Length: 112
Length: 113
Image 1 (cartoon, helix red, strand yellow):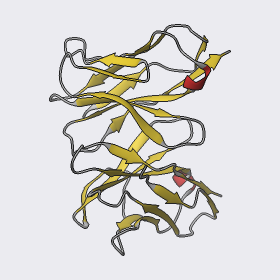
Image 2 (image 1 turned 180 degrees about the vertical axis):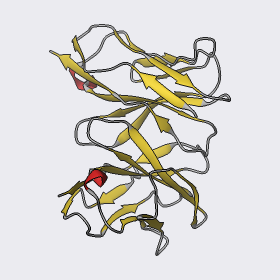
Image 3 (image 1 turned 45 degrees about the vertical axis):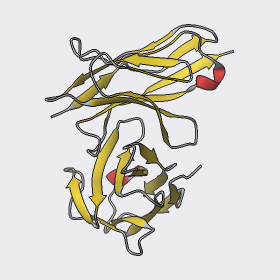
């Protein structure tokens, strides 16, 4: 079945550092890909998405590009802030109304 | 901004007891979901609900689980006889039929003793 694998955390960086969180997926078709973020004490929020190959999703300085050839959707940010500390989940969905399948999540700590 | 609300935020129960977790989805959404997250593990799909019936359920969603939309606003998850391994954070989500975006509640933490 479909699945998502993302890098283990926690990831600890200093403020203004460059961030990459790796994510790869396995799917039979052409899924939509997502990054969700969970801030402490809150629910899951959609951070960005991409629905087809080579699409780039972006939001709040974060970016991820849908790479079909490497089945990847790595999350990047050029300069992280303390407020970016959260758990980040890579996810996929086979169609817009289908369930979303999540990775295990990567906890990110940003030090001032 | 519209949001999905869940109650209770935390419930502690004894093994074998029934638990009902409540969710109020965003009002014009048509698709509803329950997910759970055991501490430190991935967010797992439990069930999806559309047009007043279950549209898909996972292997986790066995006969001990049920969902209802009793009054057109609430969406409930019932666990009939809780087990220790049911301890988790349970997330409700609803989906817009227009944009397809999924909105999650803040979760209900269930602790089974």
